Image (cartoon, rainbow, N blue to C red; front, side, top):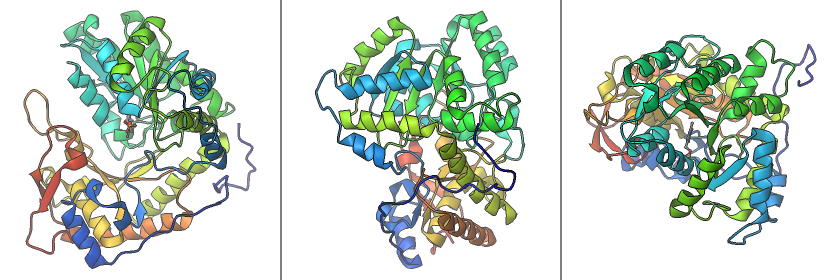
Length: 470
Ligand SMILES: Cc1ncc(COP(=O)(O)O)c(C=O)c1O
């Protein structure tokens, strides 16, 4: 339990700055050209044209001096690197899983587990979809089924655990298709697409029981498990005196296997893994990883990166770290909310999500309000954010129809240990400025739509004569 005095409520960063990277300021005219060149897709901007980069918290964190020192201890042997064994031991100590298969990043692990466990015609329930996770499930022949509680689809609902699973929805699925068509339930901690919302341990325990009764596995997307643990410590009765480290372990121990994008919680710039307990599944993963990633003792990672990852795991569960991390996100969210701007509530763990559907309620969802708002915010301020709405949701694989999710959001994602409180003030002010001009923001239409994960490389044009967005 972190020691808190009754008078101290602020969340100062538990580190000091040793090295800095200079930022470039651009003019509005330059940004108008840059977003046009990027097809109104913030993924296609050059990073040097960005002032504050809130595109993602993935691989964008600042490593500690310990992690940098760890890079020097890289054992770059092709096979059996000591850094692999070190990582494997850390994974078991902090996350409980016995076997570790390194991958180049999270989606590498998603590919492996989907190919190993899913047969064509299977159904994969999960607490809301994630883009790459669902795609790998579909490529393996499965169909994703959303079993998150209804509150998660309502941006204004204050439910403290919007990542919880609705067990009745699982019962429904099993009644319709039979449990033998459900190889596993896919559970994300701190559900990204719901706004960084946690699942409770109470719900996870219920789910464990349900899965045991139906002989179904739990695969844990543990990409943001430490942030989830913080919310449990803060909100779930009985956990206030437990450390984030203990809660993280308890969450993981309730699940059978995990995919991990190490680029988030664990604060490395690249890396991931599949972690498992079952020796047979581990053997299958070892056979498959050599096809897609590399030998089972490095997957897609250099020895030095595995070392930095092991150290990052240790740092990620420190109470002071996670309190400041979520504190910074909350600081930004509260500032934006004070301006009367609708955001997803409660404020999540890794990002503030603007409710673009509400902010640009003059645009139908077919004109991609969130994509439009992200482009407009960039032109206004040089701040890069990301669409998380209809563009990200893609199309139904059977019918080809566009999904129209209830959440049409712009994500302001905060990299860990990178930006200061003053940067957060600028972001809040810039969002307020674009909010004041919201009626002048126009919609977009696709000029190029990639067949898969279209949000990454899709291009758009503005649905008005120039000047385009604002
Ligand atoms: C919840 C979640 N799962 C999986 C992934 C995929 O991980 P990666 O980008 O490392 O492939 C991400 C990345 O954004 C994520 O947020």
